[in-house]
Image (cartoon, rainbow, N blue to C red):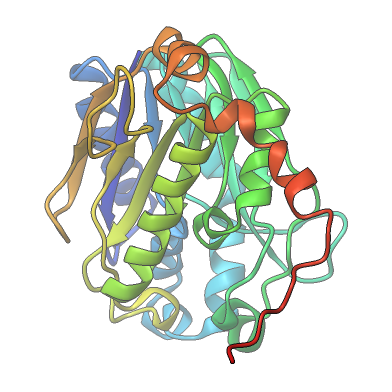
Length: 296
């Protein structure tokens, strides 16, 4: 299959038609390159806050509710595009009202040619989400069985916690999708290092799709740094640096890589190292208390 990861810049949009035209153009461009799976970033949906006007977009709470107001239309648009172009799309995440939380969660929805496949809510909140924005943590992990393979989603900060990804891999995930939204190079680097580590230790492919560029009109996403990339384990059948493809830093656009499930299975079976198979050995190694050794 061919995977497309987006480095996506948020725009202040005049109306719904402008948003629909933008998303349609992005999907059409990726489909024209032969992409089968398209990955948009975390909080890419926040550009919909601009449809409420500048004052709404500039207010953290009002922006959440303006984006959620467009949820049904966003779903209908992505379903139509996935069907029209015969692709799978991880839509840009955004606030959604979950039945288990009083506050909005951060939700990414996976679409296929036949409609909505499912969604993944972000599990672990950053300090900004906890302390300033009051975004609720998600409950439960999901793997999505698709004709392209078994997919798991680790949204931004979630990619920095190995046990989340490992639970998805043990449930069958072969490809991890890591949409992100980070304001500084340091934040982008944390997600990049996390995504690459998840690809290494699980001997799988991890797709990193960030927001890029300024969006001063919305304080939740006012500055964005990153590069889109597709990572694999630096081992048999994959690049020695683990990077299958990557955009230039802070440059909007798609990056593409051809990914083979057979290659993932092969490296897990016959790689120079077998991190995926040897994961369980950690448990026996830490069963005994760690000894503290003092210098003389």
